[in-house]
Length: 338
Image (cartoon, rainbow, N blue to C red):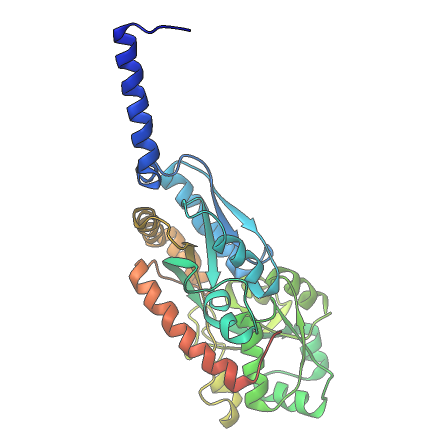
């Protein structure tokens, strides 16, 4: 048995007491030094879509601000529910975040019969990153072949060729899917829905001519529209987009049957419920700061995204309002996913 001298016993007691205090402090002690390792931003869709684009725009800015890597992790499936569920069940230590969407946190609770997570109780909102209009678009060659130049032409063709057109989306329950379902219900037209695991894969089939129409988030489709591979028929917002000022809204182009049509999208950061307010506020402040820089702001606006960076409290109120809004849209459209 080793016998400690009095000075050594005193040192050992101090060290033990200090260790007990650290353990007792738990997450609170860690908050001051967060982050001490890489932070994961889960994107609940495949690479190439708007959710992915915005996450990859924000991640490098957060990496610079905090001195740790913010890594984008694509976990696609079930209209964003797979990725959202991963974050809902992750430790609330600030090292796992979600780039949530209007689908995961506005639509899906009303659309899906059962969710593996609660979009309100299982998350703490950090900040709205950006809002974007969707764009009703077609494969350019197919539009020409079918003689479709505008929304009115499209409705006429869809009604006279039931079952002929298919509609791609980034997944069942996403805003891209629901924008199309709302269009179908308001016009009485029929399109076969083909869900993909994100806008990226869906756009590949759109450009390749394997899908006819899509109501995609504008940023992820902008390059293909400018390249002439896709033709934009209309934007789904209540006002025209500054990024495509010559393209009318669906309401403008669609006539009386589409009066009041509006189906925009949004994207924001969330953390698991119980994450420290200190961590949440620090992330929000850095996101808001980066979105305010001319380079990022101009880049987002050019792609059709409107940057935000609002406070956690503002984002919380916004999500609550979106739940109410989209529950009505889902009910009115008749859309449902088992």
